[in-house]
Amino acid sequence: MMPRVVCLASILALCAVTVIPGQEAPQEGAPLFTAYPSYGAKFDIGTEKFSLITNMLVYNISGTTVTDVTFKQTYPEGVSVKETYQRDVGTEATGEQSSARRVEGNAFLASIQTWKHRQYVVIFNELQMARRLNQITFPGIEVNYTDAQGQRQTTRLQDNTEDLFIYSNVVGGLKRFLTKYNNIVFDFEKAAPNRKEWEFAPIAASAKGRFPTGVIGTFPGSDQYSGYFRIRTGPPGDTIQLLVVYNQTEKKDRVASQDALLKNLRNYLRWCGEFDFQEGLKVEQVKWKKYSDTWHVSGRWKDTIKNRLGEGPLEAHVFYGAYEDVEYYVLGLTHGRALGEASATPNPEKEAQLSAEMSALIDTFKSDIKPLSSDRR
Image (cartoon, rainbow, N blue to C red; front, side, top):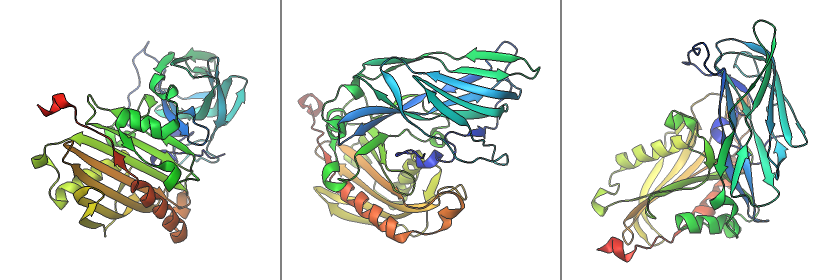
């Protein structure tokens, strides 16, 4: 079963085993496997409930191929698997394999026949919590396997503890959460009433050169004038995502040329995946809401990996709030096509529907950033 909310950049890697180039075999006595755990904060606007989307990458850095491998993740008391996701197919040529996976009580198990050096497996589940938790400790993954000498071995990775306070203790759901921690508001109920589930997504690993870890949510800066967040809703083929980045900026330093604008937007687009702009972007300066000289960009993004996601519509608003001395980037992407080879087939009706929803949502943007008197001295 495909997840309701999935990162566009990594849909073909999730729950698969993929070769990662450039890693050397460890020295004798070094760890055989390592993990990069991340947990996307997810809000259900309809029920005002909070859950976590796990994205646990486990690497084989042993220098050898191991076989008959089982991964076991035991979840702590009060946490259970709401839904588990996997790839239906995988091929030797792409370095991916399907895994058999199941849930037994409070434990998740996945297995693969062969696990090569420099490959990783992804444990990808949605977790629900019986109560609001301020902190949670996930026991380390247990890896049971047959080594190169034919002996059965078991390795247990480190536990990891995560702070959930700001996510699990907000009453009122996503809108109130963004207002409290980012002073930014979108009217989800008005613009997208049928989309109840929204997940926070990390900056794509390809943009930062490393995989995200920890709880993925909103990232307010050291003060109220800077921060960013990326949210998304819907499965592949019915996805809307928004990236919002804001930074305190003096008026003389705000983006003033089209070249600088597109350079910055291209960088932020890559936060969303291995994407680039297609030719034919429409760039204009307009008055939008209370913001004069807003840069408005519309056009299409494309996946730089062939036969994966294809392409889709995009829209961006870049504007300057003179009252609060903050520059805002609001970038929206939609994905309305099938995956794989079928991603080359257009779906204009679906894309038009998604674009209308995305535009309506962006148009509800409101910033509640208000300068403190001490900042005006």
